[in-house]
Image 1 (cartoon, helix red, strand yellow):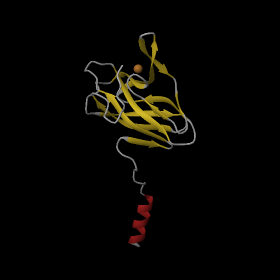
Image 2 (tube, rainbow, N blue to C red):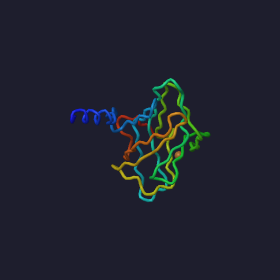
Image 3 (cartoon, protein in one colour):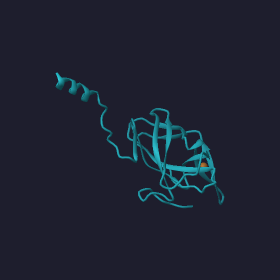
Image 4 (cartoon, protein in one colour):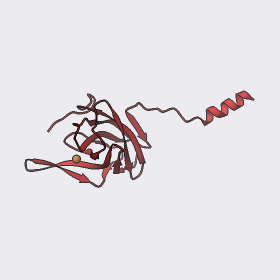
Length: 156
Ligand SMILES: [Cu+2]
């Protein structure tokens, strides 16, 4: 009797997470290598970077982002006009089937607008990404002064 109850409890337990602390899975999508640059105390904006990997056979589309760390989280890229690089907000970003989308300094980034407070080196904050197909995926974004060693670091 006791054994049967135990077996039922085990069967009801959720499956163990099969991912590391820096990877989040949402169906066919995997989010890796998230980080945000530490900001000065008075900064009103920050930027977060990450890589989205679509392991599935269907395209998906990143349509929004949000975080308790800031009033708004916008999808931005950099465009060059002559010698001037400036940021441009995107309404959505496609991720092809089997594709990989990298956000990195000088390119795509999640712009955190009206920060609730500075992003401090060594802390983490939640970031929720909303996809047309996969729905919402929330990740923890570590804050550091520069790109983690595993991430491609390029400056502009
Ligand atoms: Cu921006």
